Amino acid sequence: MGYIRRAHGVNGAVVIRPLRTDPGLFAVGRILGTDDPEMTRATLLSVRSHNEGLLVVVEGVANRTKAEALRGTSLYVPRSELNAIDPDEFWPNELMGLAVFDSAGRRLGRVVDVVAGESQDRLTVSGEAGSFEVPFVTELVIEVDVGQGQIVVDLPEGLVDL
Image 1 (cartoon, rainbow, N blue to C red):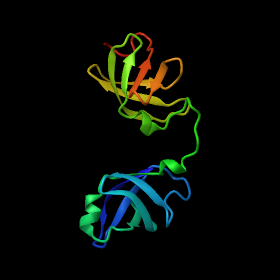
Image 2 (image 1 turned 90 degrees about the horizontal axis):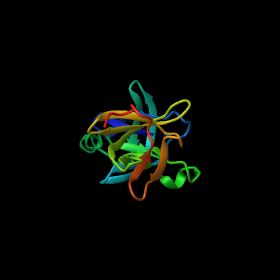
Image 3 (image 1 turned 180 degrees about the vertical axis):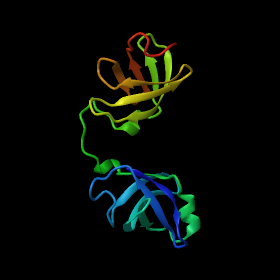
Image 4 (image 1 turned 135 degrees about the horizontal axis):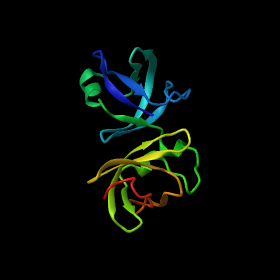
C-alpha cells in the first residue's frame, strides 16, 4: 500500500509515498506489515499530509538514523486483515517472482510486476528474451501454482520470441 521514501527531520519521522488512497489505511494507531527484517510491524503514531506524500511517526523510530535505515521499506496490510478471495484469485505479492513456463515446459522468465488494468490485470515477465506482458486471463494463464512457485501460460504465437 506504500513505501517509506526518506527520513524527515531529526526525530525519526518518515515520508511515506502511499500507493493506495483508501480511507483509514494510514490512520493513527494503524499497524502495518513491512518487508524490513528488523521491524516487521509499523505502528503509526502520527500521520499528516506532506507535499511529497504523508509525514508519519512510527513507533520505535526515534531518530534520523533509524528513519534513514527504513528508506525503501514497503508497507502493507497484514494478511490477517485481507478480505477473503476466491480460490482462483491471487494477491499480486503471491505472483511476484514466480517462474513462468509455456505449455511445452519451456521457461520464459519470472514475474517481475503485476500491472492492474481496467479490463484485466497483466503479468510483466522478464527472461532471456526480454520483458513482455501477459494478460492475466484464464485463456492465457492455464495454471498458477504458488506452492510450486510457477505459472504455466499458453501464449498466442508472436507474443514473445523464444
